Structure formats: structure tokens, C-alpha cells
Length: 188
Image (cartoon, rainbow, N blue to C red; front, side, top):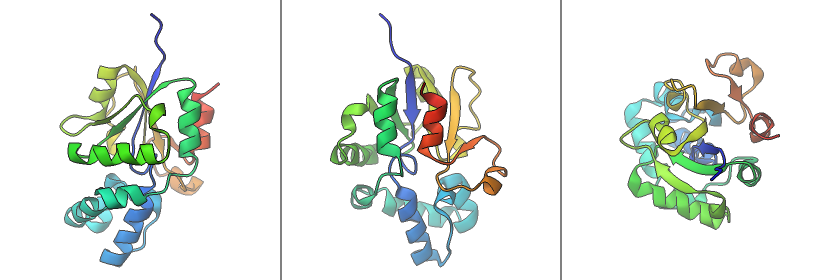
């Protein structure tokens, strides 16, 4: 039996724009203005601290805030396009009790049928999850999930929507600034 290639996609900040909500929370609770692309854990903790990040995550990743999230620009169209070429999995670092909220969001945006499964990497790294499922590409907005990848069979793609070229040069991984740029690399 011939199987299609598989792609893994992070959920928060990659499919659902929870980064916009994080940015707002940080402004309201910390009095700091940051860019949305700085709201992943790796970028944000040095700015607001671990404790505040955990407080923010507890709020943003709950059901109410999850369902309020808008899609990342181009994400839904990208899911449709990727689905024509790949089996698509959501690989999230959300705790297991919060994965259901991501599934509910995907259903509300009528794209859950495009996703083979929504899985948490809690308790292991995303590389291990991807290798176990035969995923060959991992798209994430947080370099902490991509930089430790050592397998040559897993291609890491960093998606930082809104990043400008000057900021892009400061990142150690090649960074894609839009879903369109990601699709140009992954689709014929």
C-alpha cells in the first residue's frame, strides 16, 4: 500500500492566532508591548519571565480564549492545500486536557476533516511524536521544538508570521514569514 507523506503542524501561533491574545494579555498584565511573533515560549519567557508566562498560558489555552482565537493569516487555506499532498497532523505542546479545545476550534472553523489527528507532545519532544507517526515535516512557531531535531528524516520549518527580514536574520533557523512562503516550499 502506498501512503502519502505526512506533515506535522503546531497549533498555537501557527494555525490559531493565540499569539494575538498573548500579546494583548502581556500588555494588560505586564505593561509590555511585544510583537505577535515574540509570543512563543522561547521568545516570550526572557521578556516577561517564566511565572508570568505560565499565568498567561493558563488563561490563553483555556476553552474560552482558545475558541475566541482567529486563524493565523493564510492558515486555513494552507490546511486545504497541504491536505491535497500530505496527511496532516496537529502536534501541540498543549497539555492533554487542553487538546480538546484545539479540536473544537478546528471543528468550528470547518477544517477538522483535513486533520488526521490532534496530538499532544506533553511528556516527550515533538521530534519523537513525528518520527513515531512517520511525519517528514514539522511546522512550528517556537524554535525550541525545532532546534533539537537531529533526524535527517524530519525537516523543521519555523513559521514566524509578521517577521521582517532584519529580524529574520537574527534567527538561527530559516524562518518563513507567511503560510504562502511555507506552501511555496512544500507544494509543487
